[in-house]
Length: 455
Length: 183
Image (cartoon, helix red, strand yellow):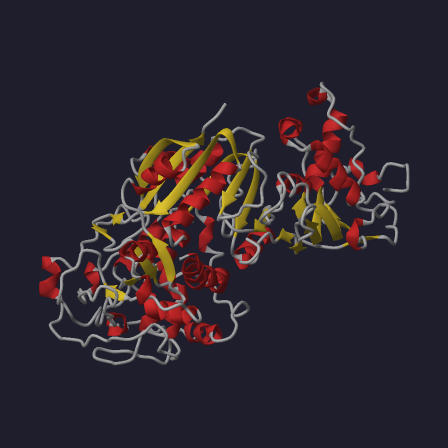
C-alpha cells in the first residue's frame, strides 16, 4: 500500500506541481484571510513553519516573526526563494526539524494530497512533533461538501488547467512531452480540453485578495460575514469560471481498496502508468450529485464573456466544447455504473473555493436535465495512458472515440477531499498530542486550529 | 579555526550598507576564509578574497539551528547539528530588531550556532553561553543578529553527524528529501 501511495502521489501530486510550477507565480499572491489572521496573531519573535508552502505566499504575511517554508516541490520552492523567503525542500512525512522548535505551523491545502489515511495522520503527527507545547497548528483541506454540491467520492483526480491559471506562458520550465502542451497553449487557439477548469487551480491560485496596502478594503472585508471582499476583477473571473465547464475524475480510494481487500485485483505496478491502469478507474462526471443518463454536448456554442478580465491573455473565443471530457470509464473495481451529467454551461459552476457570492446552480439536477441536449454520446472505456495526442491535436467531439489528452491526464492532481468532521476525527483519534481549538468551514475547505498539549 | 585574532569587520555591518550581498567564497569543507574588508559604497577596494555579486538569498544560520537530519535509524539526537560544508557564503544586511533577536535567543541551540558561525568563517565573538542579562545587551544582540540572520549559505552541503549523509544546498535552498530507501 505504501508503494502504491507514493506512486500515486508521485504521479498525481509531485510531478504535476513540478511541471506547473512556472504558472503559479502570478496567482499565488493571494492569501486566505483566516490564515493571514492566524499568522498575524502570532507573537513577535515567533518561529513559524509553513509546511507545503508552495511559492511562499504566507511567508511574508507577518514580518515580526521568522517564517520558514518548506515544500516537496523544488520548482515552487525556487520561486519562493527568489522572493527572498527562507525555504527548503523536504517531505511533510519526514520533516527535517528538531522536536518542538516552532511556535506555530500552518498546513494550507496540503494534507488532502496524501493518498492514505495513515499518511495523512503521519503528516499531522510530524507537524505536531515540531511544535512547541502550547504552539498552534492550522490545517486547511478541501471539503467534500462544496457550496450547492459535493464531490461524489472522496478520492478524486482533478484536472489542472494551465490556460486559466496564468497570464504568463513560460516555456522555460517545460521539458519533454510537456513542451507540446505549452506550445499548444501559446497558440492562443485554446483547445477545449485545455479549458477544462480545475478545482485545484481555482482554489489554490485564485483566492480573494486582501491587499494590505488598501486598508480600507481590508476593514470593509473583515466586517462582512464572509470575511472576504472580492474585487471586481475577481468577480468577473469567477463568473467566467462559473460559465465554464468543470469536470473531474474520480479515483478509487486507496483506503477503500485496502478495506475491500481488493489487493488481488491490483496488479503490482511496473511503472506509474500501470498503477493508474489497474487501480484508478476514472469516472467522469460533471457534478457531484449526479443523475444518470444525461448526455449531451457540453457547452456547445458557449462563450465566455469577452470582457472578462482574465480572458485577455487567453483570447478565448466561442469554442466548441467537446465531449472529450465526456469520456467515461467504468468503475472497474466495483463494476459500477457510468454516469454522466451534462448540461449547458450556465449550470456549470465552480465547485470549489471562494465563490461564495455567486449562486451557481447544480446543472445536473432535474432542472438541468431538460436543458441539456438530448444527443447521445458513446461511453468510452479506455485506460489512462492510451492517448498520446497533444492537447491541441485531439479535437475530441461528440461521439469521438479518442481519449482525453495525455496532457490533461498528466496534469491531474490527486485529492482526498474531507467530509465534515473527518479532519477533527482524524486528529482526535490518531493525534492525541493535539487538542482541537476550533474548526470551521471556509470557502470550500475544512479548517481546524489545534494546539500542542503540554505546558 | 580561524587563524586571525582580529574580529572580522563584517560583524558590524552598517545599516546603510547596500543590499548587494558580499560573497565569501570558501573552499569546500568549510575552511574559514578571513574577511578583511568591510564594504560600503565608495569604500576602499575589496580584498581579492571577497567577491561582490548580485546573488540571491541563502540559508540563514537561524534556519540551520532548527534543522536536523531525518535519516532513519539515527541515535537519539544523532542528527543534530548538521555540519555545514559551504562553498558559497553570502553576507547581507538585515535591519536590526533588538526585541526580535532577544526573543529568539532562548530558542537557539547555542553551541550549534557558535559552531556553525565558526565553520563559515564568521566567528561570532559570542560567549559560550548567553549572559543572564543578554536582553539588555545591545552589542551582544547585534552580534547574535549578525550570525543568525545576515550570514547565508548559498551553495554547499549539510552533513548528518551520525550517518554522514549529505544534504545539498543549491541556490540557497537546502534539499532535505531522502530517497525511498533512506526514509
